[in-house]
Amino acid sequence: MADRLLDAKGLNCPLPILRTRKALQGMPTGATLEVQATDPGAVQDFAAFCRTTGNELLESKSADGVYTFLIRRAA
Image (cartoon, rainbow, N blue to C red; front, side, top):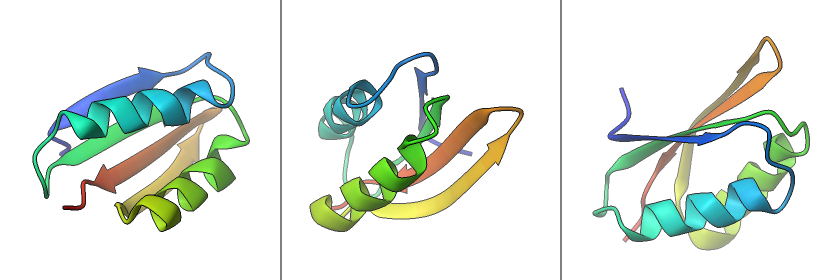
């Protein structure tokens, strides 16, 4: 279970990433954030975001048009 949940459903690029960045900044190192989004481009966006920021993408899944990402905050 994540330490925090971010509901980004209904938002289009780049808003889910921008809100995720802001949410992670307020979290301690090692904390986890679950993000829920409906933008199909979010799958590639979150993979790239984690790769470039050093945060760890622990899980990426989709069900019923909702994409869920579990991210661990890096130092």
